[in-house]
Length: 349
Image (cartoon, rainbow, N blue to C red; front, side):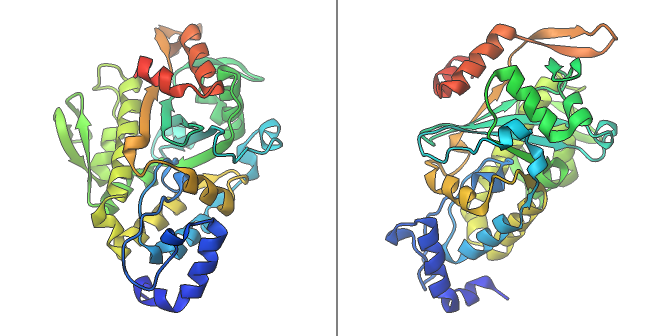
């Protein structure tokens, strides 16, 4: 059934939901089709991701149903983190560890994570800082010693990955989100393609990506975010491409052509929900609470960063590794702990 036709009959339900979400009278659902601005969940597009948008009032229940259907797994966080509830105060920053793997790669089949980012939502809710941690960073994995950072996922799953990041940055991670990254990138097909500014010309899997503005979808988009060998900075450039495509997806999701098309919007919401697993602390109510507090409605609020490395090297056992910039990483950790990520970004963007 077309949800827009069903909406008037559910007006009283919509009012109950609006009241539970704490929406002002001007944002409460109406019986008309008039478009109303509403921030949707950071988690729904984050995982990551990490997005916000506007929807007409009769989409309330579609979004709420998708949030309710998210897979929630209490084992994603280490016990020390899970036992300390996250503050939902509007002036408290919130951190999300985003983990994703490519199910087609050899390493993914071994349980390694090819995508690792920390999404830091500032206390003033004006920006989210998306920081990539290259999978080849040579770090101390608690209980195992020095290794590439993505080995933590193979040895102890999401919980050990979160613990490793906490040890590395000296910052508590509030939430964990595991993303079927291939499924997430496939949103590009549902959206009819997304446009990115390609910094380096490259070729991969039969596709050619010229420098400049290019539009991607489906298998081509997957080839674009997987490629690292034909790029001057390898994994670092690949991580930058991943962040760029995530931002492009956010922009397309919150575009008028998607938000005014119930069919496309519903497909996007359902696909996002189907490829994301979150920790049990991200309840439906807490997601809505975060969504209400956001002060941005698209990728203009997303700021991209790279965890600092000092160069490349080889481990004692012959692995190619990224060497951590200890001083730079300490500076990043201090910025997260002190909610001064804007100053850090201005310096290191």
